[in-house]
Length: 256
Image 1 (cartoon, one colour):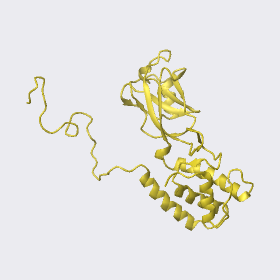
Image 2 (spheres, helix red, strand yellow; image 1 turned 45 degrees about the horizontal axis):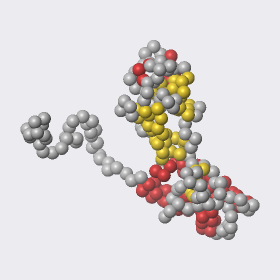
Image 3 (cartoon, helix red, strand yellow; image 1 turned 30 degrees about the vertical axis):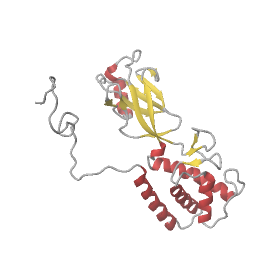
Image 4 (tube, one colour; image 1 turned 135 degrees about the vertical axis):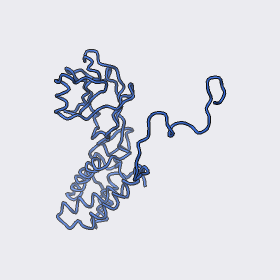
């Protein structure tokens, strides 16, 4: 089922609960509809945090020289305006082909800045005060930071998309026609649960319904790898997993 707009989600939830379907939603003067819109905004924010949805996942790319500012020993990069949280272990230095180390704790960060032996060949990072902070590799003075292309993935907090203006997204309902970037049945089930909960009613049935729909959808949103009860790390070097079967050509064009 394609994405539905704010009017559809609120109307569907209200009808399922036996309430009158509103003619308008975001600009409605009806207190029940106003409460539904407020609860929809809360539900959307909760669902952003609850699961790293593929439709909200983005990639952040920047260069440590051209896109960062220098603050003492540290390089700083402003977080994207729609940033909600990073996906763990996606932070990579593509120039040197190694992962970044972090996120570092406050204690580790102060040790990096003030310790006697804090240099190394890898970039360290942490997130603080709306910035991604980087401790340069090899202790290079910040006046001449090493140039590295950094990449990482994050989840956007914008769960609504304008249906009239291209590439325009929101984190709060702005119009009845804004598209909700979640499975419509998941957000509808959650909205009903939030409303019933706000009214102090028994939420058992709505809670069970929401959990069933939620679990079904998150299991299908991205797919899942095949797991094994006897995992074995694959070698990154030459081995049986990354060489072809059969013989190989050598320098003179013959086979060994």
